[in-house]
Amino acid sequence: MISMYFILVSLVIVCLLVKSVIKPRKYPPGPKWYPFMGCSSIVDKLTKKHGSQWKGLSTLAKEFSTDVLGLKLGRELIVVVYGEKNIRHVFTEKQFEGRPDNFFVRMRCLGKRMGITFADGPLWREHRQFTVKQLRNVGFGKTKMEKEIQDEMLHIVKYIEMNCGKPINTMSTLAMSVMNILWTYIADERIEEKRLKHLLDLLNSRSKAFSMAGGLLNQLPWCRFIFPELSGYGLIKRMNEQISNIIEEAISKHKNKSVKGNDFIYSFIEEMENNKESFTEEQLKIICLDVLIAGSQTTSNVLQFALLTVLRNKTIQDRLYEEISKTLEGKLPSWSDSYRLVYTSAFLYEVQRFYTIVPLMGPRRVLNDSIIDGYFIPKETTVLCSVGDLHFDPEIWKEPREFKPERFIDERGTLKNIEHLYPFGLGRRRCPGDALAKSFIFIVIVGILQKFKIDCSDGILPSADPIIGLISAPRPFSAVFTPRESK
Image (tube, rainbow, N blue to C red; front, side, top):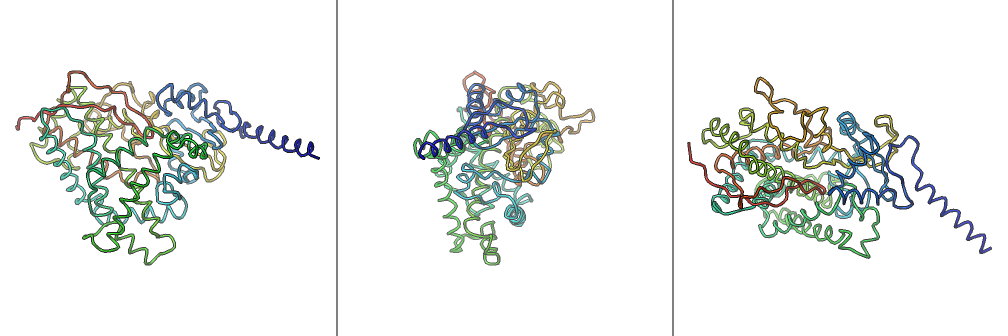
């Protein structure tokens, strides 16, 4: 009897092992799968070799000569799509609007799949629409926002003036400015500087530690009990605690009506009285979390890459200054000037192409069995879009490895080819904060270049190679800012 039981158990185990390595019919090409781990070891090895998961996966796609790469990481099916046709298909079709439901995502959302970034279905549709509408009602994307960006730009310029002649790294100053503008619309207040710096340090560590597929923690959630720090569990837990404290304090102040003015939290609390089913305090917390995380580093990293580029290329810096000086004549920059400052706008487009902030965009969960480029994609598969490879596609961009703002300017002196850039995604899941990001990037870089010449701090050009984790970031560098003579 015992031997029969042992045989049955052995057969079940063997069947499970065999099933775990068999690919679905017409599944996209990719590396061999192994029991339990799929092809995780192969992806991890290439990630370490090439310095990022994005570059490692690109190498695999080239190896298998495919624009749709099929993987299995742990128990999760992962597909990475390449090429503009495939990427636009995923961005715009409804069957790809879902978000993965896994351990990593739930950890990111304070234990539950809520908010708007990682929610889907009716909850996501209702709350994304509400969030966008209410943020606009309190001035997001309007003249009020531009004035606040201009004030932040002047604050940044003042900080630089106080440190003129000394090597400075503007990264934390830029990131804090973006965060404070976002938090002004959410909670009508600024975050205390020491606390904000600590929070940004945690977010920066998170970006370096995790991949878009979730990493080891997502594939083996139980590992958090054995090595919580190595798995990243401890880092996420500390980050969640810090952000939760900031958000809970803000909500408490609004409940006590100790915050004056009109902001998103007040709008949400008011809606909670009318719609108690989906408008909960927990949902409010996670939407606030989504806003802080989404805007914390992406915008400031674009600005840092722009400063790095002008530091490394004096010809570009001089041309930008000449256009800004001639066109604005010392006036405060505004978003409407982007149409007059053609070379400056082209330069910023090129920065966002050359240094794609989110090279692997997503993740998306397939809501129904689907076909991409002739390959079968099973329901519940996670899909990533390699926007980084698209931005270097030689079929779209001539000499893509060269930094050339001129590629965005036609013979009439107007901007072109912008439709091939996807820094904010596309479709209904397009980043809702793109209006703030575009205005902030433009106004701040113009304001800085209008006032200062930027040079190396030690005569050695800093590296142009980015650090790529969840998002791309420049390697830490300092620069010397010298005031320009007023014309």
